[in-house]
Length: 342
Image (cartoon, rainbow, N blue to C red; front, side, top):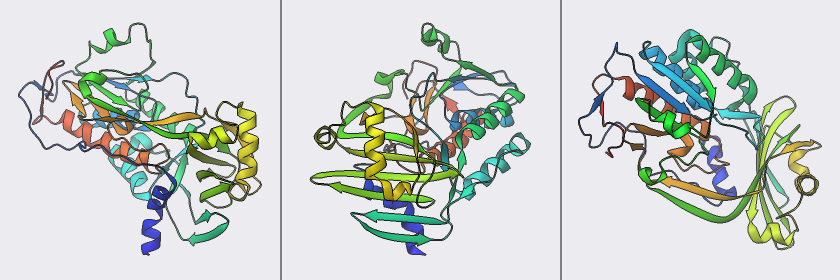
C-alpha cells in the first residue's frame, strides 16, 4: 500500500522541480475592512482562464449566490495538446455532490490499473487502482454548458479592451491565464530553469501511466504519460537545454521532434502514435508572493507554482475553486476594494 500511496509522488524523480507558493488559498491571515459580498445583492464577477477550475468556480458561486453575475473569459488558442485531466475518484465525487444537478452528465473516470516505471531499460510495474482521468473536450463542454444553463456569460478575451473591461467587475479571478495581469501587484518571482519541455497527444501507452528515463549517450530525457480514454493519452517530455541542443532538437521542426521521441520512448508508447505535439519551450515558474491583490484573486496554477508535468495540478485547482467561491460569497468575509493591497 505504501508503494501505491506514493506512486503519485514518483513524478518528482522525473521533473527538475515542483514549486508550490508559500501562501495557499486559505482563509486565515490579516484582512482589512472593505468590500463585503452581501448575500442577495448583485455582484459582478469575472473569471479569466480556459481550465476546468474557472467553470467549477463559476458554478460554485452561482449555487451559493444565484443573484451574482459571472462572466468567464476564455483564453485564445491553446498550443499544447490537452487530451484530458488527471483526477481522483474523491474529486470527481466532490464535483458532482457540491454542484448537484449541474453536472449529472459528468462521465466516470478512465481508471488507471497499471503503472510502468522505466529507468534506463529496467522496468518496475505497479498494479492496482491509482486514480484516473477525464477526457478534456467532453469535460470542458459539460462544464461550459452547465455554466451557460446557470446564466453565466462565456466570452473570449478581447485583448484590446481587456484591462479596461475587467476594471468594471467587483471581483476578478485569474486561473491558468497566459495574460500577464497585475504581475507587479501579485509580486511574481519568475524562475527560469535550464529545462525545456514539450507535450504530446498519443494514441497508446504501455500502461495506464508510464514514467521513463531515456539515456542516449550523455543525453537524458524524462517522460511521463497517462491514459485519458481508449485511444487517447497525454505524454510530456523534458530535458535540459544542452540535451535538446546536442540532439539537434532545440530548434527542430515538430515532425523531427516527433520522430525522435517516437523512437526514444518506444517502450512507453508501446506501438502508439504521436498524433500531435505542443511547442518545445523553456520551463519557467511564476511564483506569486501573494494570491490576492485588492479584488483580484489567483486560482489554480497561477496561484500555485506547480510544475507542468505535476499529475494532479488540476486537482489542486479544483480544490481552490470551491474554497475561493465559498470565501467570496460568504457574507462574513471582507475583501479590500480594487487597487488596495492586503
